[in-house]
Length: 153
Image (tube, helix red, strand yellow):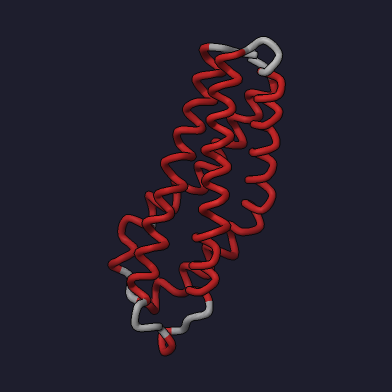
């Protein structure tokens, strides 16, 4: 197995961990949080994760793209698995930028006294789209791991 493929697995694993961890710890019970708890929690998560993901996600995509490029020279199954993993990972980035981040930025602007009437619906939309990052991310990681174990570069 190549160092490049291992790096891809590690980086995608870290990205998926950032998606999976909050989903396990927070998202499944977020509807039970009162605004006084939810608002500072969202702000802290954003402050902690945004700088990390701003570096980690592009790096993971770059390394997976490199895996695909190397696999194009004689490793057709790894090429296919890596390409699908890349597309799935890119999908998580699109969901993050197009949906998740704008919702978080909106939530960060709220206070307990300025909550919009539809704040629960917006929170629930955020939760629903978060799952659209977890599932493709986990599948992308599984595809890369399958390529590494079954069809190494």
